[in-house]
Image (cartoon, rainbow, N blue to C red):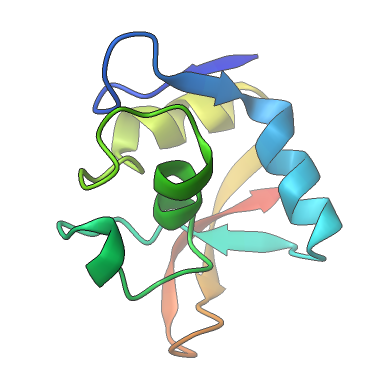
Length: 101
């Protein structure tokens, strides 16, 4: 299922299975949303969805928050993910995130 990135520029997006594969490969049962109004270089949650989208997906705007509610809704709708609270591997604090279904 194609996930559009509304803040990513024309045609920006990815297939939801890519995120699932990333999580499985990295042994992640969940990933924090990690949405941040900062540049990519200033992003302090490198193991978050927002960072992953900016760093690895075809977005024109790497310094713009990508893990917005519309993206989360699309990922949940794909059936591959559910909303959850999970612990940030960087700060050890609870944040909104996505779990594999």
